Image (cartoon, rainbow over all chains, first blue to last red; front, side, top):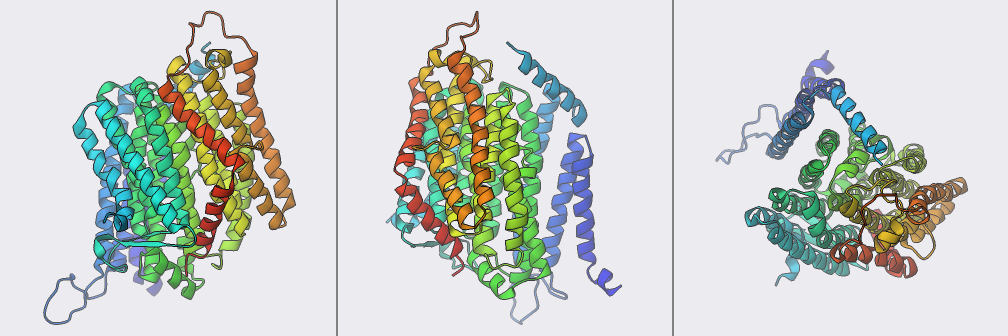
Length: 126
Length: 495
C-alpha cells in the first residue's frame, strides 16, 4: 500500500504515458493522434516536475534565512520541452489542415486507400 | 580572436542566418546566404577537426558558465568528424539545390525552404557538438521540426509528401520523447546533464533498475531517429516524397547524426562495462542489423520508384553501421565511423543523380530511366559510380567500409557474419544492376520527347561527391586515421 500511495505521481505518469501512446497507435483520426501525442508528452512533463519537488520545499527564491527549496532545474528543462511540444503540435495540426485540403479527409484508413491508388497510378504510368 | 569561439560559431551562424533568409524574401538571395553560411560552417568544421586530431579535445563553455551550471560543448575527434560530414554534405548540396529547388518548390516558398534547410543544418550540428544531454534534445527537435517541414514541401509535386511528413512527425516525436524520459531517469540517479559527468557517475553506480530502464528508453528513442530496423517505417516514404535536394541532404546526414548519438551513449556515457551492454549488442543489435541488411536490400530490389529503392537501401546500410557497433571491438567501431562518412558520400551522390533525372523527367522510376545512358550520360555515369561504391567494389569508398566491417567480424571471431556481409553486398549488385540494365541496354521508349543532360550547376556537385567516393576509395589513409582516432575518443571518452 505504501508502495502504491508513496509513488502516486509515477502511477499518474505511467497511466498518462500509456493512454497517450495507445491513442497515437489505435486512433485513425489524425487530430486525435496529435492529441494522444500531447498526452504522451504531458506525462513526461509531470515526470520531470514531480522529480524536482522536495517535500516541504518552497520556490527557489533568494531570501536571508536558509530554506528548503525544490530543485528548479527539471522545471526549467520542462519549460523548454513545453515549447517544443507546442511547436510540434502546431506543425502537426498544420500538416493535418494541408492533408484535409488535398485528400478531403483526416481518417487514416481513407488516406491509405487514396495513397494506395496513387501508388498504383504511379506504377502503371508508361 | 575568433579562434576560441569556433565551436559556438559552428552552430550559431546557421541559426542566425535562418531568420535572415525569411527577410530576404527572394529565393536566390536566400540561397546565396545559405550557401555562404554553409561554406563557412564547412571551413569551421575543418578547423575544429584539425585541432582535435591526435587526441585533443576542445571544451567550450557557453557564456563562460562552467559545466554543472552552464552548457558545455565538448569536441573530440568523433564529433568533429561528424560535424565535417554534416557541414560538408550541406556545402555540396546547396549549390545543387538552387536549380533543383527552383524546379520543385513554388516561388513563394523558396526563401522559407532555405530557412528550414539552415535550421536543420544548425540543429544537426548542435546535436553533434554539444556535451550536454538535454541540449542535445533541444537541437534534435530543432533539426526534426525543420525536417518535417522540408519533407512536407514535396507536396507541390505529390500530395503523399504530406502524409509522409505527418507519419515522420508522429514517429520522430515519440522517439525524442522516449529519449527525454530516459534522460529524466538518468538525471534522477546522477543529478547532472553533462555527458562527461553522467558517464563518471554511472560508472560509480554500476547496475541499477532505474538506469537500466533509462538505457532501454534512450536506445529505443534514438533507434527511432536513426531508423533501426523495426523502427524504420517512417523512412522510405519520407525520403521518397521529399524534394530531391532534401532527400540527398537528409539521407547523408540526419541518420548519421543519430548513429553518432547512439555511439556516444553506448560507448562513452554508459560505457562498454555497463551491465546490459554486452547482451544488447550481441542479442539485439547483431540480429536486427543482419535482418536490416537483408530485408532492406531485398525490398529495394522490387521497388519501381528509384528514390524508394535507395531509401530501402539506406535501411540496409544503417544495418551495416549497427553491425559495426555490435562487434564490440575497436575495429568494429572504426568500421561504423568509416561507413558513416562513406555512406554519406555514396548516398549523397546517388540521390543527387536521381534529382537530375527528376529535373528532366519529373520522376525517377525504373521505367523513366529507360535508355537514359545515352541521353544523360554524365548523370547516369555518376549513378553507376555511386552504385559501385554502394556495392563495395574495390577502388571505391564502399570497399573500405566493407573491408573494415569484415575485419571487425573476423576479429570478434564471427566468421559467419563476415560471409553474410559479403552476401548482402550481392543483393546491392542486383538492385543497382536493374537500373544499369534499363538505362544502358534498352532503347528509349517511343514517343518520349528528347531529353537533354542536366545543367552543369547540378552535375558539378554530383561529380564532386563521385570524385570523393573514388578518392577515399583509393587513398583511405585519411578516413581511416580519423575514424580510428574517433573510435578511440568514443571508447575512452569517460576519462
